Each structure stands twice: as structure tokens, then as C-alpha cells.
Image 1 (tube, rainbow over the protein chains, first blue to last red):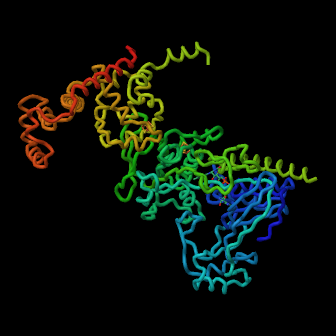
Image 2: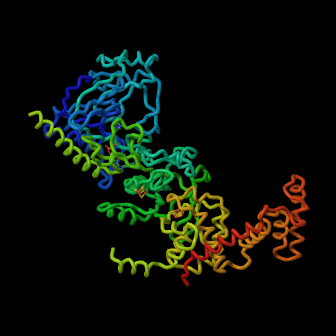
Image 3: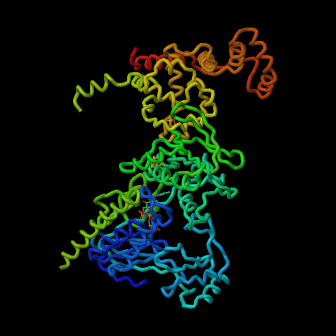
Length: 426
Length: 207
Ligand SMILES: Cc1cc2nc3c(=O)[nH]c(=O)nc-3n(C[C@H](O)[C@H](O)[C@H](O)COP(=O)(O)OP(=O)(O)OC[C@H]3O[C@@H](n4cnc5c(N)ncnc54)[C@H](O)[C@@H]3O)c2cc1C
Ligand code: SF4
Ligand code: SF4
């Protein structure tokens, strides 16, 4: 895996989320040589943690599966997981990338039989479920992980668990001497698809995400609604495990706010409308309240919005919630003034979901490559970027449809650069 | 944009918003409000206001000149700055409230017996006499603002506090006779007068 065959006609794709996968496949399927570098031990990025997709309410696993099959079948594509690009030097048509590979302590012999996980004892927060559940120190990152390989948590290395895992493996797939490696290879063009991360909800101090158990974020809610998730798909209150039927969504939690993120994250209105379906589908007597400044359901999403608006048990309250206090029974109590009549309210709910926005996953001051970055931290198209092209949420807050469009565009631009190199070299 | 177009936009613009932009301190920010309501919900005195800040800004844009300028809402602002800290658009809400209050006073539109307005008046006059606030006289004029009888009552009610302030040298009985001041009182008064003239000259006439 650490031997990478690459030339300055190779396209390097950084980030293996839906955008990076799409860009890599589109380019590889035209015949270009592509190396895809992904930080996590598996491909798919954040969409692998969503329960359903708006607007069709279909499952992201379906699209991921197709992409994973395309990836397996394509000889032009090399995938390196558990790896991060730490440095990029050079110019369009002639880059050198330095990639740091973190040890997973499991080699390609792994059949995903799961014996190692049975053998170990220590537990860790499961990052796939945003810490809502625990996983073992030997684990499959998620059921559809690609590559389908177990991973050892570095936390068990040097403990008894490590040896137990190794002893339990019948295929000699566990290598406890695995170490961090650094490799270098050339590339002609680079597609930057490092995606997004959820804005840290604890920074919105008056909402008390870090003080109230029954205040959660929208990414956590996706995991909660998923039958394969930490609650088995049951929508419940983290404080007491009771059914959460009276659910509130707070829009623009951290977005469109000069104290937090300047930009509109663009997807969270639709995400809350989608998650309203989760609640209404779960309980016949559900009550959903959506607190908003204005609902941004762009172009064809308008129909989706209208459908939710028509639901009898869904209320839209035009108001940015000022604060959350502790009500009776650990109910979060939402305080504010509404814009349609200027009524002061103090409403209690079973569960509150903060529609937190997206921020770029790579922070402005740690970009390993010199590109034009805007105030919000997204990559702008610019002359100075040379042969580096942003795809998906590295370029802006986008939904999957638009992320994929941007990825295809980036692939096309990268192909043009490596084709120029090919022509020059004859 | 053509000159005629510009002239038409100018002429048919909601004139109260333009008036506020021209004459009220920080008034040019009013158009930036996106009506989210966080300011109103964060105001500790909010429930005592006839119109919370968010509503005031909408009323300005809707041209409700009389309702805004004669309301006592902006006089309820205690300058706690909660709203400024929270506003997603960084409107200087506290300053706009004080700007509106000042403007309403200039136009003689303050509601009768508005206690905050009255206090501000007493404070200003007190300060203008010597260039420094005379705590003793300020306290007394405040107690007696509603007449002699209520004044005595109020003074008695607060006498313990007064005694403590004297003990802590925060107030001196001698201040009753003249009191301390800045070196050049008449210079200060001239300066303030000039500033007021400049401000009046700047103000456009809309009515
Ligand atoms: C609550 C919520 C619900 C949503 N629901 C929907 C929906 O229903 N429908 C829809 O269309 N959209 C939805 N979205 C939006 C959707 O999640 C994004 O459009 C999508 O994840 C964008 O994919 P991406 O590949 O650009 O980024 P990501 O999914 O973030 O992928 C980026 C990848 O890059 C990797 N990476 C990061 N840094 C490095 C590095 N330095 N080196 C190597 N790899 C790196 C990451 O590990 C990750 O795998 C939702 C968003 C939220 C917040
Ligand atoms: S998409 Fe909606 S919730 Fe998200 S930032 Fe924009 S307006 Fe706010
Ligand atoms: S917080 Fe700011 S943007 Fe929101 S209503 Fe108040 S003034 Fe307007």
C-alpha cells in the first residue's frame, strides 16, 4: 500500500468524501491515473453518517455502494486511507506531495471476521456516532466501510488488548509493529476535497449545548434516527432515554452570525425539514417546532418545504431563539420573541436539535498548500491556485447534489492540466 | 444608474428611515437588521418595553414616525449591551436606542413624566454647572423631582445609604454649597455650545 506509482500526469485527490470519490472516479474513468488520499480509515466522508438524504429521503448507503463498486473495478485508481497530505510543493504539472500514513495495525489479510473485536475489552467513544456510543479498541469503523477492514485504536497498543486482538486473528492480519510512515510522490494536478466539519455548538453559549443533555446537534440527530445508530433508530431524550415526541429545531445555530460563522450553511434548513420527517414518522402524536429566521429551501426544494409546512403537527416560529434555560424535568426551555407579532415566549420541549452549520474541515492557518482562501475558510477559484482545484464542501457549504457537480467540474479542470503535461512530454 | 433614477429613488424612499439615517446616531445601521429577534429576547428589561428593539427597527422602516419617536421604549434601555453582544449582524443597538432618545428629545416628543428622560435631564444640567457631577445635588434633585412631599419621603427612605456614602467619602455635605468643578467651567460650556451648534447645523429638516 505504501508504494505509490505516480508521475506528473497523475491526479492527486485529497479527501475521500462524496466529492473526492466522485472527482477521483470521474477522472479515473476517463483514463487518468488517480491517487485518492483519505484521512479516515474508510471512504465516504460525512454522508456515510447520514440516515437519509433530502429531498428523496433515500439512503446514502445506496449511492456509496455504487461508488465503492466503481472504485474497486477501476485499475487507474489508487486509494490510500488513514492518510493525510502534509505538504505540497511545486506548480501545475509538477507537484510533489508528502503524505503521512497513520498506522491501523491491520493489513490487507483482514477478512472482517470480527474475532479481534470480540477478544478486546477497552472501549472508546465512537467517532462515527459523534460520541453518542462506545466502540471497542478493535473495530470496524462502520458496517459499510470501504476498505472493509478492522482497525485497532492506537489507545490499546502496548496494552493486553493489543496482544489479545493479535492472538484472536486467524489470518495474521494484525501487525502490532505498524508505524507511522511518510511517503512522497509526484502529481500534475490536485483536487482538494477535504469537506466540512460541524460548527462547535458549545461555542453558542446561550444555547447550553455543553450544559443540557437534551440539547443535541443535527449531525447527532442523524445518527439517532438511523436504525444502525446508537439508539437503534429510536428518537429519545439523552437525559432519561424517554421518547422525544415534542421536538424543536433551532435554525442558523452558529451560521449567519458575525459572532460565529459569517456564511449561511445552506443545507441546515433542508436538513431540519428532513429530520422533521424522522420525528413525524416515528410518533403519531409528534409535535415539531421549527424556530427560524427565514427558511432557505432553494429551487426544487421548495416543494419539500411546502409539504412539511402542510403537516398539521409541525409549527414554524419565525424567531431566532435568544436562550435556552432548564425547564421542568430536564426539558430545555426556549426563550425569545417572535417576529410575527413580537410575542415573548418561553416554550418547553422534550428535545432540542441545533441546526448547526458547516465550517471547512481544514483550518485557514494549516493549509498545506498555498491557495486563495476566503473569509469563511473556503477555497476560492484563483489564478494563484495553479493546478489545485477545490471540490465539494472545501469550496463552499453545499448539499450532495451541488458537491458532486462541483467535483465533476474539478475533475475536468484537473484532466486538462495533466493532458497538457502529456502533450508537452509527447 | 441614471441621474433621474437616482433622484426618484431618493424622492420615494421611505422618508422616516432616511430621517433616522441622517439624524440619529448610528441610524444608518437600521437597514441592516434582519429581524431575527435575538436582541429583543436577550434584553433583561425587554418585557417592560412597548416595542422591543427588533420591532422599533421594523417600525422605522415602515415609516411609523410618531409611534417610534413618542414611544417610551428607547428610554427603557439600561445600556447593558446584551443585545449588541448577541446581534448576528453587529448592529450597535444600544447606541441606536440612545440616539433615538436624544433625537426624540430634540424634537420635543418625549412622553410626559418619563422617569429616565427626567433623570437624564437632571444629570445633564447638574453636570453642566461645574463640569463635574455633584452627587449630593443630583440625589436631592432626583428625590424632589415629583414635588416637596414625595421628596422628603424618598430622602428619608434613602438616608442610610446617604450616610454610608458620606462615610466612604463618596459624597460630602459641603458639596451643597457650590461643590467642586473643573478648572475652566466657562470654557467647557462654550465648547459644548459650539458642539451643539454644529450638530444642529448638520441636521436636515424633514418635516
Ligand atoms: C445534519 C446534516 C444533514 C445533511 N443531510 C443532507 C442530505 O440529506 N442531502 C444532501 O444532499 N446533503 C446533506 N448534507 C450535506 C452533506 O453532508 C455534504 O454535502 C457532503 O458531506 C459533502 O461531501 P464532501 O465530500 O464535500 O465533504 P465530506 O463529507 O466532509 O468529506 C471530506 C473527506 O475528506 C477527508 N479529509 C479531510 N481532511 C483531510 C486531509 N487533510 N487529508 C485527507 N483527507 C481529508 C475527510 O475525512 C472526509 O472523508 C447534510 C449536512 C448536515 C450537516
Ligand atoms: S440553511 Fe437555513 S438554517 Fe442553515 S444557515 Fe442558512 S438559513 Fe440558517
Ligand atoms: S439581533 Fe440584530 S439583526 Fe436580530 S432583530 Fe435585533 S437588531 Fe435585528
